[in-house]
Amino acid sequence: MRLFLKISSTVAIVALLGACQQGEKAITVKVDNPLDIDRGNETVEVQLGSLSSSLSDIIVKDETTGNEVRSQLLDMDGDSIFEAVIFQTALKANESKSFVVQKGKTKMQPTEVKTFARFVPERTDDFTWENDRVAFRVYGPVAQQMVEEGIKGGTLSGGVDCWLKKVDYSIIDKWYKGNTESGGYYHIDHGEGLDNYHVGPSTGCGGTGVMNDGELYLHVNYTDYHVLSNGPIKSEFELEYEPYQAGDMTIQEMKTVSIDLGSNFTKFVIDVDGTDTLTTGITLHDNLGEVSVDENAVWASYWAPHFGEELGTSIVVAPKYFAGYSKVVSDEDDKSHLLVHLKVIDGKVEYYAGFAWSGSKQFKDKQDWENNLTSFARKINNPLIVEVKGSVK
Image 1 (cartoon, rainbow, N blue to C red):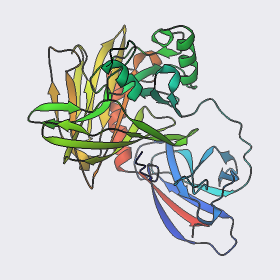
Image 2 (image 1 turned 90 degrees about the horizontal axis):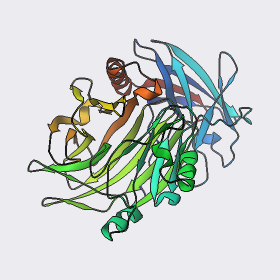
Image 3 (image 1 turned 90 degrees about the vertical axis):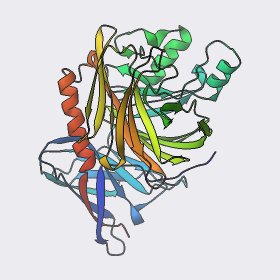
Image 4 (image 1 turned 45 degrees about the horizontal axis):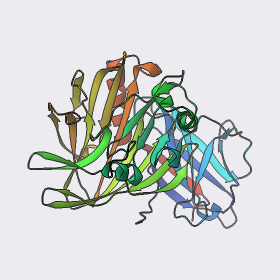
């Protein structure tokens, strides 16, 4: 497959303020919140420089308390060397905190509250990912081939499926194991949530395509994958797709997808060839819900009844990528969408897709979710300011 190697996306701007003296074995990290709102579960990424190692012997400590902070090492280029470390912090409005990155053995125990992503051969060839709040999946080439050959159990879709969790621990392995032992297991709520979200040939929550002469052309199943990092704080992977036709245009997409702990969103960074504008969308199912769009923030959302509960599915975009939105209502199944159009800049687009399910009790109602969308948009457009001093040369 074509492999696009890139630095994992973070919410932080990293400013390197100087190199250490030879032999220094620590990095000081000052983190500032430039906004007048509180921020939680913010991921900070720090390049390790001369602390880079093949050994997992790096820890992060709060400089004020001396307590270790859970962290995750990143191998940025697949060479078995850890070049960066990430950790999370919470900051009040305009607050600053300082941390120390140093060599040492962690004393923190593994946790089941984590991000997680994997290929799922026991369910054809799904690829599924999650954190402590939400879960998603997409469908692979075997599932597509089964449909094309008329074999029962296949799926032909480039859309993004939502798995509705109500627990903070990992459920992917458990739900797939249950489904293997008893078909349809994860379509029933056993106290942890369920998959009752229909995707079909739609975009689902965040699938992509291209508008040409007023018609939406969607790609179908992914053809290959590559996991770049896997929990506990961030999971990131690549999905490759075959070129597809949008009228007279030939489109190529390569997606880098990531999810951070504590967020209801997954991030898409897409390498695009063949078009100046890409479209992402949210399926409107039976059109019984309410569409809301904030063109300033920028976000688009669909809040609807969902099997006795309520479900809000949403797209959040940095303003520089936003090229407008449209609503398509159709009598055909899976053809009704709330569409967000994206400018391709330097061959890329970026956006976030996510959801809130009333069964999880994470948000009170539609207004609470939309307030969160506006707050989240402000955060991605005003990242943390991170100053690094130490062994980074």
